[in-house]
Length: 434
Image 1 (cartoon, one colour):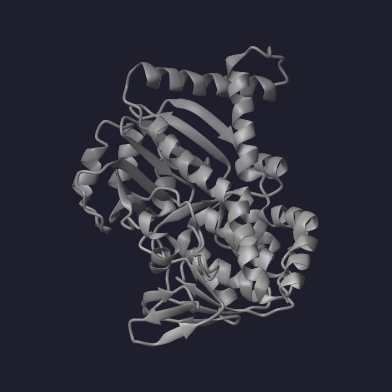
Image 2 (spheres, rainbow, N blue to C red):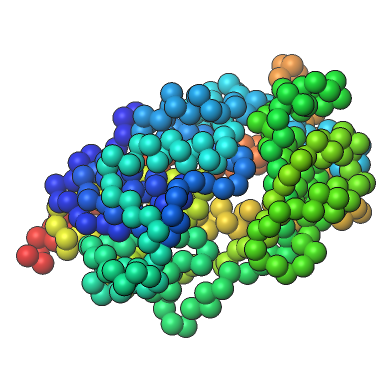
């Protein structure tokens, strides 16, 4: 299907605070819809830090629809398989085939990509379309006139301010009502080492070669798990040893000691790490409101959800014909996005708990469930008949339902469905205000 974003009949002046992946994506969609967009970024130069990330089918379908498909293919690895392993010896608990199967199931591929590569693709596309003000730190937002005050003293005014400026957002300060303005994000109690290892070093080792050639591998253990993918990007999550909230170069010996009881092959991969960054993992409770009562400053989110957010906001604001419709359209944006984004955030928290179970009865039950699902899947792939009461089949069905919700979703189609049912009412309402 073609992109649902069309050129708006009313061009708004929109300020986007933040030029990360979320900020650039929403800037691209709004500019494509015909709006004048100014992106404000505190950094002097643009570049995305971090390591690899998953582009799941709900995201790749949008990026490919927007014309980024060929550029993505130059820098991605197709996610072929997802394998969960027991931490001590690497025993396979479950292995989920992806690749073409995922594309056939959800209508779009699953890719692994370096964050910097995705950021570069978005930046190259958006630079000719918008104004980007670098070295422009936002220090305040006026919700009544939709303006942003910069550290230089300059005031940038528009019709709408969108916050894509991270957990410590200046836009968030005015989005939240006073009683909810406990603005500091919370330390989750976890931290992650992130490292990139040249793939050829793993390919040269017969013990490690398969970890490059066979998709994503996740070793799960008490309070820790390791994730390695085809690129070869290695992420090592664990209980934080202090409350420091700043990213910093990792102590490699401390990093290796953290996983000394893991699969010898995982330890071998760790020995290839020449440098890594230690990132504290921060979070905040789901927001109750995403917009100020004025309808002018707005709040976007991060990673895959931010790309969906951009699709929805760009599509909705491509319909606008009168400024009086803006508040209503932003309210619709929250209605369309809130439950999904919140469920995704809370689901991430519960998934972490499941992966980090201590050894014992709960862990054993988890591992048994994973294995039964894998065995049921293998039997189905062989054409064998299995009973409806098979516990593995039930788990597979539950997992398919969750995957369909996560990966089968089309953000722009969601907007189109809303428009077909409700746009005439918005036009009637705005006509009554004129």
